[in-house]
Image 1 (spheres, rainbow, N blue to C red):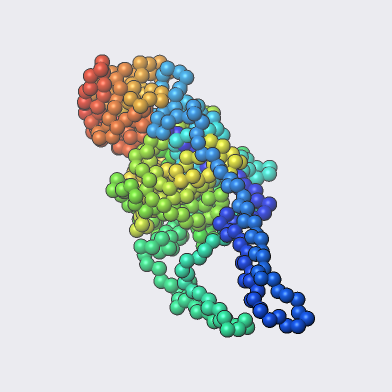
Image 2 (cartoon, rainbow, N blue to C red; image 1 turned 90 degrees about the horizontal axis):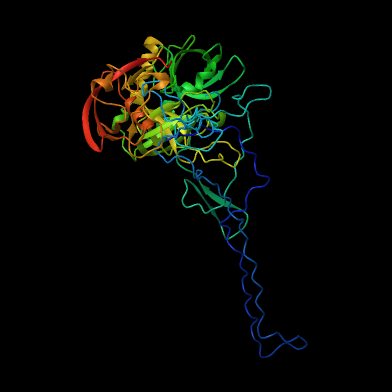
Length: 522
């Protein structure tokens, strides 16, 4: 599946706040009949036997609800499926595969907000973020770039006015309450809570406790290319040496001669340099210049042990609003995700993602997805967006479908980037079709650029795989398409041995494959 990067601009505020939908209808109180008097006073007019009831006031009219269409176009690929290419051949499953068919129109951008979705989600932008996809929303790792500043590149962040609308409703039970004395109208008695917000000690396991500990170790990243283009994303402290982990699409604009800075919640700002970046994984590492000595790296969890329904906490800078905390749960695991930055020549990124309903918007990309104990379990990277963007503006925004790179994979990639400056990919050594299917990943009959579809002496060849074979499982993971196979292979390390189930001539077979390696994105 392919996803969309996060949005581009903050929608205009409504001209007037909406009429509360739940306003009760006004009803008139009937007038009690005048008491009957058998002996009226002399000269006084006779009172009528009864007083007509006052007409009932018309009920309050609630405005018609405004709905947002989130249905993808009918020709959009089904979730977990690959894009349907026009050409009969597909790229090598090692790297680099071409962008999913339909790029850029149907391939959403990342989740970081700016130069960096699900949501890539920043667009999870940085973001998730979490990007501004130009076409219909699909599944994948999406990052979205914010609207450009006047005179600047496409990723420049535009500051907007934040409008909050209050919705009328009943309040059931608060920390404090007011008792109004009904024996006179001149005074009231109030009762205050025993503790004020500033003196309450929040337990480490609460959302507030996790946020208080994690926020000082997250940064808002500003990336600017030599052409003036760029945007905003998020990152988190990886080690005490000053390395910050984020999404590749967050810093891509600044890789060649650009500028990077990282700002902590306390306002301290540091220049930074790109140490290494991995297009295929959508992971990057930057390093702070003159890093402080009191850095506290965020603890890394175990994404393999995450369960559907576990609580999640996302931190990022959605639409440039730094240090924003949102919550949700793990909605699904091992979600096949493919994304790009939306440009015509962009290569795709693939992941077997953690899906979360924590709100991820442009600017969240590269930020940490935490568990209830405050451990990093993923990197917010992409969002699924409605086809025309949120609020009807073409801006991608959260609809509760965010995607994060599992931290077990991201940690391995980050360590490789710190050590070598280049990513290392596991590979099967065969070209895989990216056609949309539900039957498996087919090894193509032709290779890329005239190369062999199954690399001679490579992992697939040594395991007996041949062109035309259809891989249906990798270990215990069902494979329904080429992009799914690529994402699953990349969750492994070079040298790992995997069990491949495939079909040939209508019969099912299994074989053991020892994965090879490929260094770099080229």
